[in-house]
Length: 291
Image 1 (cartoon, rainbow, N blue to C red):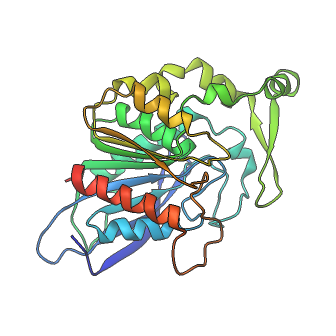
Image 2: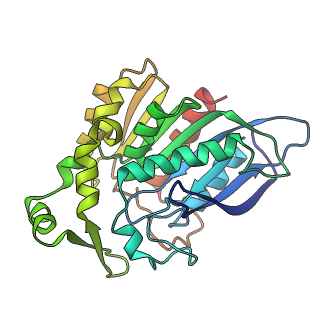
């Protein structure tokens, strides 16, 4: 199905803390009463819904016949300026638990009609998730946690966030209550609070992908770049092996980096070849399994 016209609208819903979860809704315009399943797009750490070609991805998926909700996690550090980290005090305490809760809030808002579009008819009982990196790991947990989720695609997913905490980071948390990471794009030093570490350990059974993937039963596609410099492709190999879904696949992208050749800002006419391949596989998986 190729939709000729789509509408794009923006809004926000409140998190369970009362903070804004900002979103963009890409909707196919329905002229004959058709209803469209929904895909929720989840960004990764130091990411955001407007990063690089992510908006183009959402538009492509909408043209394939899906309502697409691209959301910013409530604690991701992005405020009213859509591409700048201006709320670092929120980023400092962005836990996996809160990210997971935010997905639940968006699903609930969709089903209550709080995220909607006058131009289209969304079937909010049929939801798919697409997550990149940390967003991929959260998508796995959310797919098990929330019943409306019926299909899943992960890009460069982290298998076990506990393995990403170095001894130096743990020492920082013990001595000063935070550690710092650098945003290579902006040069910003970004604090990660001890609460983020503690949450990943204390709530592992709920928030860690490797703990939850064994309970996954929906069609799941794991995609990873062979040349991923940030999250090695063995993460997706482990997740694929542990996944109990009947319909599951692992696809490794030759010459694929963590973002499959894409960067921010993205101003090219065409996607990099690895990224285009990933999008084609993703769209094909949803078309086959999310109806």
